Length: 81
Figure 1 (spheres, rainbow, N blue to C red):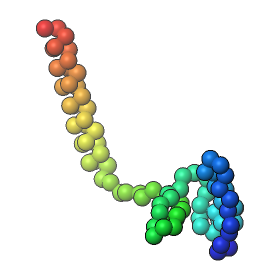
Figure 2 (figure 1 turned 30 degrees about the vertical axis):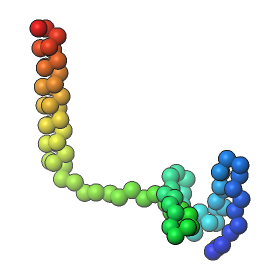
Figure 3 (figure 1 turned 90 degrees about the vertical axis):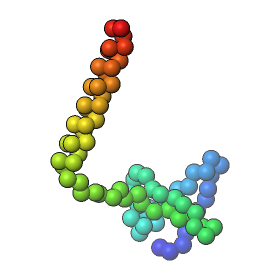
């Protein structure tokens, strides 16, 4: 299935036929739509999986917790004074 004539409804709703979605690898969910050279390109949204060292995440979360605790204590000191 290469070309299909589609109808755009009043509110901009566009229905992609199942065969077209299947051939493009588009499933239920979100897609990315952009304009390239005056044409609308719709493609499946495939999030990138990033491999991150777990210890880095734990360190960052620990630092975040420490900063939040310091901020909380500072607010408490301000209230008590």
